[in-house]
Length: 117
Image 1 (cartoon, one colour):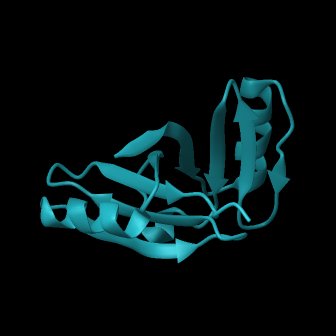
Image 2: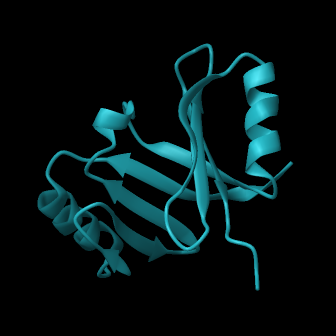
Image 3: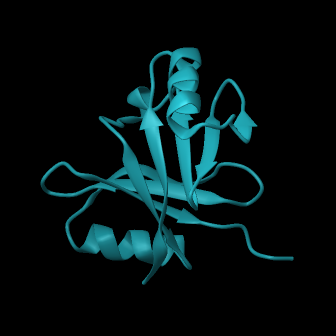
């Protein structure tokens, strides 16, 4: 059902401080650097910093599972008892994300890459 777990996004309150910390930790500069998202790539892993994450209900880092069909995967998780945290939405370039909370309060992210043209 998934293509693996290769993205984790951290909600941050001070984007500049978090960017400096993760630059040191990962030993690299971000590949994406904007006021709404900072992204790093390290060892095949995407690490994102979201300065608006707390206001979206993120209580800690959210792992994003890459899926082929985000809408059907979201529906299946909701059918299994998860609650919607963020409905499916485009974050740019056709990439779709959504997130849910399970019965234990764990956050689960879903990501679908933009279709190849």
